Image (cartoon, rainbow, N blue to C red):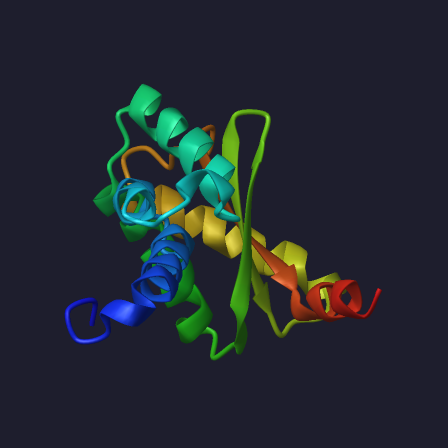
Length: 148
């Protein structure tokens, strides 16, 4: 795409950077970000910088993080839940917190998060929950935050 649409390279690189960080691929996101004209002003600059430092310290590769994310999405599919394409990623106390908004009422979120914990424990030697935390949130919370 960059070769075919060089006049839109900044927009293309910015979108690729955003999708890479949403896919928990901090190393790839960092690589795309450095190709933009003004990487320090990108909305994900600080998140990518801090996230990459956290992953490097922990020896955590993009592939491993993406695998954990895929386990979280597989549980959504298994339960036939709708999830919003908008996810939220932030860093809290040295841990990357990845929130996935699903179509369950707030009261039922606790149970599905327990299921997620079980899936991660059963399918990994180390859930890395001290480094990256996947958590389901009710889509009602997301929608409410958008109207506020």
